[in-house]
Length: 146
Image (cartoon, rainbow, N blue to C red; front, side, top):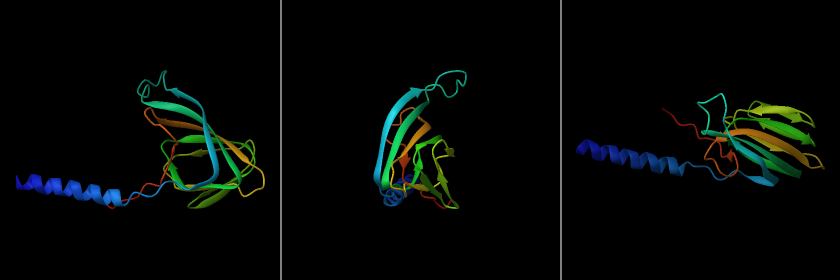
């Protein structure tokens, strides 16, 4: 019985610590996203059927717009439709223009900026958990020591 109390206390303490470390929402300015298409996976990859969905989202960055440090709930390919996007990862900064694609694994912290005087429009093609609702952007995951 004594060990079960210690276990319960450990779970409560760990939950409280994890809750205290939760980062604030992802900072955004001049940023707007509209889901254009969503479809639950089906087909020959039967182990994925019904567990994931494919989503296409159109994102517009106004001049000077940005999204702060974030991750994504799932991986995806991005297509810059118009404008010029500055994409910053911990070890590299790239500038993408119209017609250029890039891949995001979802688990690498990054930011994106429109440093120009014209809007930037991007199409996001993403794989998300079937039950995922809302934006795919999430605060960076906090690394814990094991």
